[in-house]
Image 1 (cartoon, rainbow, N blue to C red):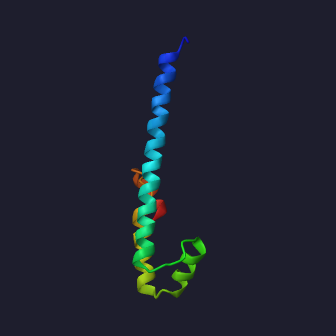
Image 2 (cartoon, one colour; image 1 turned 180 degrees about the vertical axis):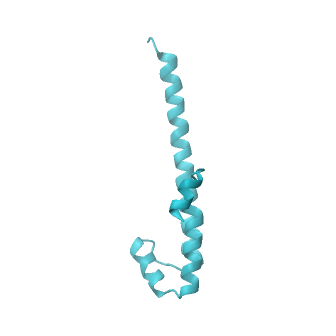
Image 3 (spheres, rainbow, N blue to C red; image 1 turned 45 degrees about the vertical axis):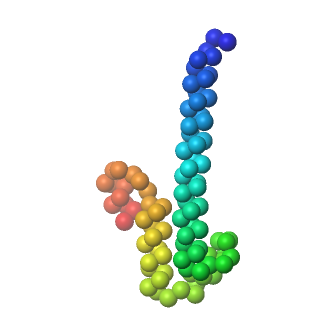
Length: 86
């Protein structure tokens, strides 16, 4: 039991990391659920989503694309990364 304090601290850090990951997954799930409801997508699979995208007109597709880009864009703070992705 030499490093029990260190083990406890690492354990607590691991629990915090898992909690943050779970929260992020929950936020993405809520966002996607909202998208499915907004665009009236009944099938909750990638194939159902793709079928609905094929049926969309250009304006709705552009709107959906912008929403997805805003939500899932990289949060990188370096300007060089943003310029490459744009």
